[in-house]
Length: 117
Image (cartoon, rainbow, N blue to C red):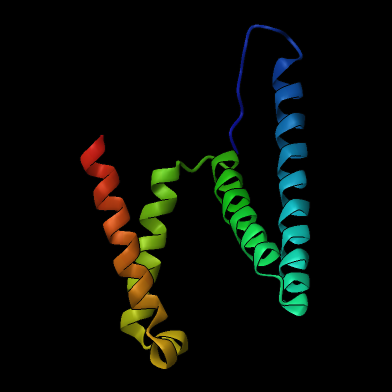
């Protein structure tokens, strides 16, 4: 967990409490967006599904950041997890090839990001 210290005597306590509240809020946000995703699927509402999936991704990355991981660390871990699933014969890969397709997309996206830095 990221604990920010500053000069004020009560600031570490306040920062820690704020961090805990933020993590709790993000937890609830993830649950709400998961529920919204399934509502969107049930209603066959493409906009609702895309909105929920996008919110889930954003909340996941922000939660990781709040817990002290950089976005780059998360990207690297996702890339490694995709590789593991592709080569271990994960059912989604076996049935649809979705994970290798995502791995390829992710690698291209990261390569593009690395070139612009």
